Image 1: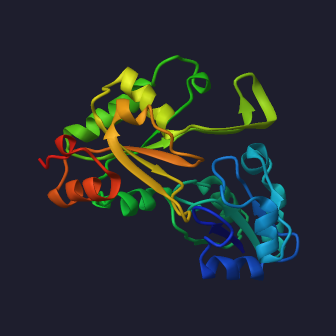
Image 2: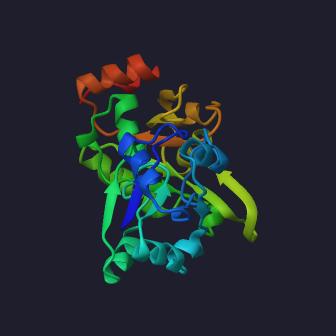
Length: 269
């Protein structure tokens, strides 16, 4: 059995009870994880190991996508667990690994956990069914250009044309920097940086909503013009940025009451 377990949003205690039981049931030496797509900002690997009383084999991207044999071998001969931050098949998808397990005749299951997508709706009051396609805003050096990719702006504008909100995931780079592979490199795009990129490349007066450190004891939610958000400080990672579409009157009330949105930017359609 290979069980994919989401660790939740913030620290070692964000996991569900079912997820914790899955880790406890795994064979010795058969607990794997990746933290290159995201990680728990409130806990490091040692914290997670101590909380669950296990040793974790942390795999880099190549160790998951190109050399997954140790994970698959452990699952073929016993019970293995693969851990990721957030929800293992939503915020981070490892469908390829799951399909490889099935090709070997290994059973799989998924233990879900809170994810950034659900937190974005829960913390802001923006209704989840009013979100359109999500997008990721990359660092300029990560995609070889000095501007926001056209696909990001197209996604925002297409969603807005249908009255839908856009969740912008902000770039995370671990193990690879501007000069290439670097095992010590970590960079997490901040919401003010992202707002500045969109303000310059798209519309400085558009409403944006920042969600910082979802799942932590001190999450931050703030709504304002992109140009104003670009000049703010939202503290440590992880951050998200939402560009709302049309607002229902309850959503408008929520953004004013929960995120400090200006009245002139939250008139319901």
